[in-house]
Image (cartoon, rainbow, N blue to C red):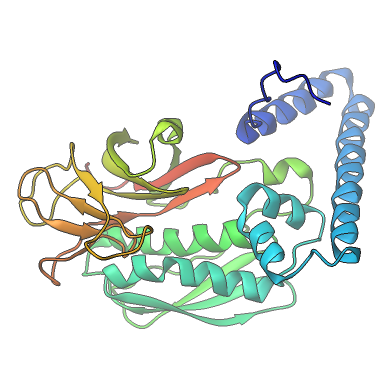
Length: 314
């Protein structure tokens, strides 16, 4: 039995672990090709060992009748567990299902820009074909961020995707995006940061992990002023600007909608007292023509990253 005086070990810093693995592999190269190959083999063997253990855990749960749909959904919904299941080929959902779920998660954000996305096909060699619908209000920086939001969500849900091909319905929509994403060639490929996209960049914001549930905070991320909100375990990011009064949102409060559920989250501007639905991509509750400007956000292994445009001034 564990010693009650011992404190629990803190959760591992996945990004730091990935960086350390990469640093050790790089350092091993100084010993020559053989040393590098041995170090890489060691990583593969350890990864295979843990993969076999995870597979055995799933088998035991299944044999005991505990591995039902709800448990599978909970495992697939945890970013760290989901990543490990993907690495070892144990994820309960196929690639098409995961891509569809990823697109569903970004639809509120796309809708806030008057757009949508349609899944056309997922080929056997991992090429995802999408069609962007609608517009993005004619803003070039928003066009890039729309594509970034879709790519980021698909990349996180299906890292075995080899490329994304995007069709658009007009010349103002987001540019075609294609190219390699994250492969599953090695364990450390699942520990890296999200891939950058031209015109925007993913920025790690470690301070967000200290943000309490039901709170909002202002942060300077890659030169862009960002308002971040946390509701339960979910994070949301917006440009730090109220569309009604054109003032910053520092000091904004979050409360439950009157008569709403515990998951509801309404953000109130500290200046004009405008109300915005956090979960519905910042849609205004006072004027349907207004909404906050959402920014793509990913949480991987406890690391929170926000995508900010690089081609515009904050």
